[in-house]
Length: 255
Ligand code: HEM
Ligand code: HEM
Image (cartoon, rainbow, N blue to C red; front, side, top):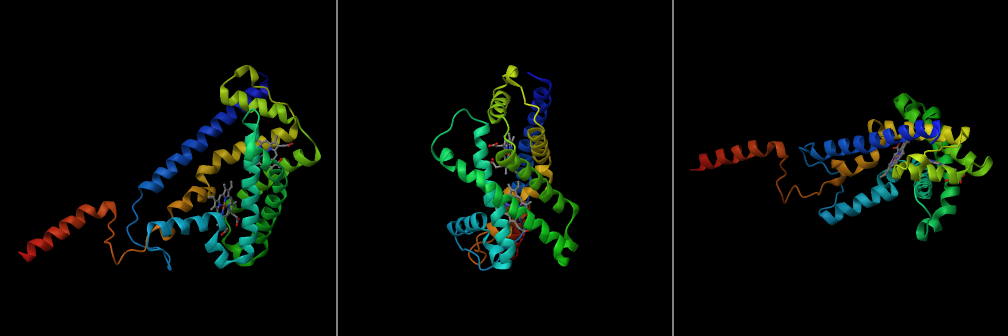
């Protein structure tokens, strides 16, 4: 174990706990909050299978964004698909050896860095250059883009310009995962340290940031509801008791 290994070991365990517990807490909140009204955006699917298909189009292809803003859609897709490939490639830092699909995707993950960075620069330029977008942009909108850009650029510098000891980073993260304290050694390369510090910061703020749109999209009532208000009566859980009282009252009146 070296000093840097100890410091970053503690930071990464804290960041992992923060992101896992924070996201779990938020999902529990989303899960339990009542949706009092049927508000699927029309035209809406009328079956559960239809909702699954709608959600798939939304998550995989940003369907509603495509219909509303083609240019934003293009840059958003560029960034998110780039990020997805980069993250898949990053699995190699947490495991010993690799095969199959992960190995096949390695080169794609490497060059996906450019898609990610170009997408982010365009999204950032949009927030500066379009008046009506700048007007509604909060500091955190800029912070997220800049943070991801800083992570992406420092990563690409390591991959394409100034190579670092990837094996050392790999064994450090395996030692973290297995609590093998003697292996908590981190090379003092400034780019590695910079990349990792920014990533830990991202992990810590993830649950309290707009990045929660990733799990949040699944809980959007305008997208996840079945359009069956003509066939079924919709009652929010908190209204069930009141509703029963109302129905009982009507029965009383009929008697
Ligand atoms: C289920 C996964 C995800 C889906 C479906 C998704 C979808 C979207 C969509 C549709 C936008 C809208 C663009 C806009 O209207 O401004 C967006 C924006 C954004 N997403 Fe995601 N996203 C996902 C995961 C992530 C993750 C994991 C990150 C980063 C760690 C991320 C970072 C961002 C950022 C920074 C923006 C804002 C771009 C801007 O400033 O306009 N997303 N996302
Ligand atoms: C604990 C988590 C992470 C570790 C240990 C890590 C480590 C590394 C290392 C060692 C490289 C250089 C690879 C090489 O020279 O071949 C790299 C590259 C890169 N990293 Fe990370 N990184 C982490 C998280 C992230 C995250 C969350 C993002 C994006 C938001 C990111 C984006 C990139 C990019 C775009 C590259 C360049 C392309 C590539 O080689 O995949 N990294 N990372």
